[in-house]
Figure: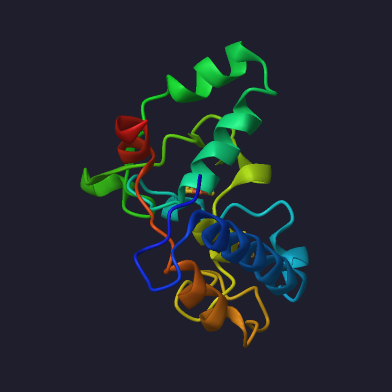
Length: 164
Ligand code: SF4
Ligand code: SF4
């Protein structure tokens, strides 16, 4: 169930309808993105850090997706050490904690089809720009979509689990 931050229009049905409208808005935005240049690229994977905020619906979507995968594959990825050398500064000794769904062996997102909104915008907006400047332009509607998204309650994967 999606939870919207308190407003005068916060019934469960209204919140559900608002989420569905948001997902449609996000799909329109996605269609306007230059995702073709991302095919086979993982140069922004270092941004997959621990602590990203997701909605309840996104957390549930990932759980549903994981249930379709081989349990051994899920165990492999969730069992990986997610503390890795800081990308681009490996010699410094600095480390970073990655998202639990970052596959550090295959260097990709293990839940890509069900990834949350912030991950879909990664590299495709002015505030999360492509680090190698391969994306030729960013959709003008991205800020409006992001600001609508921010109205929904968001927590880390771990926080949602604690509340379940
Ligand atoms: S946004 Fe840029 S760095 Fe990220 S996958 Fe696309 S082309 Fe690669
Ligand atoms: S869900 Fe996937 S794309 Fe998003 S931060 Fe985690 S590994 Fe990266």
